[in-house]
Structure formats: C-alpha cells, structure tokens
Length: 155
Image 1 (cartoon, rainbow, N blue to C red):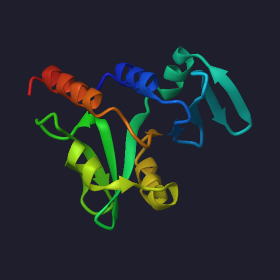
Image 2 (image 1 turned 90 degrees about the horizontal axis):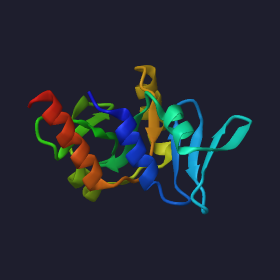
Image 3 (image 1 turned 90 degrees about the vertical axis):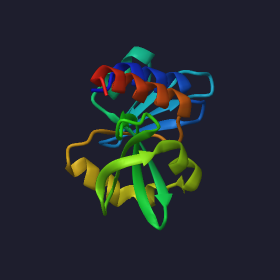
C-alpha cells in the first residue's frame, strides 16, 4: 500500500507556482506565485498551510489524464502497475486497469483537456476513486515511490 502522506508531501513540494491540483468534488489547491497554497471549493477560498493541504489530500489518488492513440488514459504515478517500478497503474474505458510504462506514456502522449477526460473521471469517481488531478509530475520521484512500494511488498 502506498504511503499517501509521503507522496502527497512530495507532490506539494514540487507543485510549481501557477499550477494546481484538481480534487474530486470540485475543489482545487493552487500554488500561488508567492509560494503559498490557495484552497478553493465552492464559495470557500482561503490560503492553507502545507499540513492543511495534506489533510485535504488524504485518501486522494494522484492521477494524470493523457490523450494517447485516440483514447484517454488515466495514469496513477504513485501506484505500482506490476513488479517493474518503471510501470504505474493505469485505467482506460476499454481494458480497464493495467500497468503502463510511465515515462514512455508521458513521452508518447499529450495532456488531456478537462473536456476530454471528463467521462473517464466520472467513471473512476463512480468506482469510489477520490482523485487529485495534476497536469505534470516529477518523474524520478514517482519512480522512487514505486520502488519503495515494491520493497515493502517484497516483490
């Protein structure tokens, strides 16, 4: 099982100014230009500490939606896909869950727009996924996380 707190902390530390994390239920966490974090949900907009942001992210799975071969693919960069740490868990309408070569998928695809991934997001949320949607992520740090998970699983 992944250590969400460590992975979420890494995600927040690497979040660049102007970039945001979109959350299931419509909330966002935005890294402002001054480095602070802004949480927005419905009519609630406020600066939050890193610890508050981590609490908000609790139980959320980080996902990157990509457009690949005329389809939308959800990549879960912090979840292992198989015993090879270069793979992550993925999901698409056809084929459902499977392993994906994370770096190759990022290289061979483009970011999906919210309009393009809306149906897949809805499908995942209907399966009880709580999503933290990002556009990009530090590749090496997700690899290290998957390596750690595999060691913990003794695979």
